[in-house]
Image 1 (cartoon, rainbow, N blue to C red):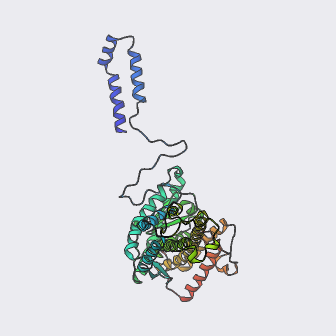
Image 2: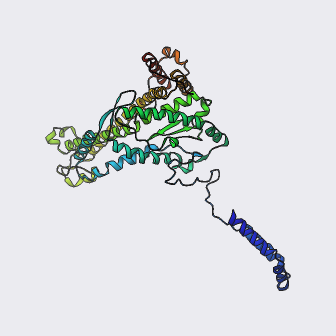
Image 3: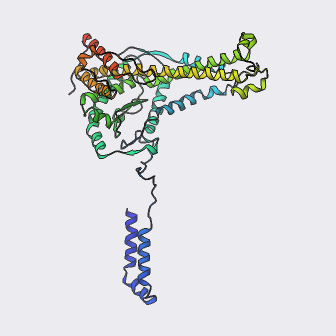
Length: 445
C-alpha cells in the first residue's frame, strides 16, 4: 500500500504542476487535455503488485507455512489426507527391501524378522493393554516428523477444497479454544506422567501450548494426529452447544489416542502384515514355479506353466528365475491371492481402529480423573457427545444410567469407528468399574 500510494501521489503531483501544464500548453495546446487524461487513466489502471487468482467462488490461497510455524493458522481447513502420508511412510520404509530383486520370500522374511526382533510389548497407560511397538527412537522420529507434516497436510493439502471460515466459525473457535487448551494440557500431563511411570515416555510432536487447535470446519469431528496434535472442528463445538463437559471428553478421547500410541501401533501392525503377505506370496510363487515337485501341476489349467524362464520377470515383475515361467492362469491366481490377503489386512486394520476407539473412550475417563476432573461430570460429557453421534446414526438412546437396557448393535466390519450405542454401553461399564474401584477424583475448577 505504501508503494502504491507513493506512485499515485507522484503522478498526481507531476500532472498538476503549473510549470508542466504551462509547458504542455505552449508545445501542444490542442492535445494537452487528452494526454493528461490518458496519463491519469494509465496510472490508475497500472497494477502495482501481482496477485494470485483462483477460480470464481474460491478464496485466496493462504500463505505457505514456514518451518518455524509447525502448526498453521486455523482460519482455513480442508478434508484430512492422513492415509496417503501413511502409505508414503510405509513405502519409504520398505524401499531398501525392494532392492532384493528376484526373491519376494527372502525380502518378506528379512522384513518380518526385523519387525519381530525390534518390536516389544509395552503396557498402555491406565488400561495395561500390551501394545506391540518399535523402539523409542523410532517413535521419536515418527512423531516429530510425521506429526507436523500430517498437521500441515490436514489443513493445506487440497487447495481446491479450501474454504474460508465464516465470522461465526472464528468466533466459536476464539470463544472455546481456551477451555479446550485447558483440558488438553491437564490431560496430556496426566497421561505423560503415567506413561513415564510405566517406563516409556510418550514422544509428543509439539509443546502443550501448540498441541491443540479449534479450527473452523462445519463437520462434526475432531482428530488426533501422530505426536498428539489435536484438532477440534467448530462444527463439533456447535453440535454439543459448547458444553465444557462434552468438550473435555472429546479432548480426552483424542489425547487418549496419543497416550495409547495408537497411530504408531497401527503402523507397526501394517508393516508386519505387509511383510507377512510378502512371505506368503513368495511361498505361493515358488510352489507355482515347481508344479511337479509340489504336486499341484495337475490342478493348474493347461498353459499355466510354460517352462520358459524368460517370461517370469515380465509376467510377475519379480520372482525366482530358477524355475519355469508362469503362464496367464498362474499369474491370475497370484493376483487373486494377493488381493485377498491385502483385503484381509485392511479388514484387520479396521478392527484394530475400532478397538482403539473403545480404548480412547476409556482413556478419556482415566485421564480426566487423574487430571483433577470429577469422574461423573466427565461421564456426563461423554453421554452428551455420544448421544449426539447416536442421533446422527438415527439411534437415540437413554441417559448413561439407563444404558444397561440398551441393545448392543453389531459394529460395521468396514467402519473405522464402532457404533455410538456400543461405545456408550462399554463406557458405562468402565465408569461403573472405576466407581467401584473408588479411584481418587477431584473437580475441575
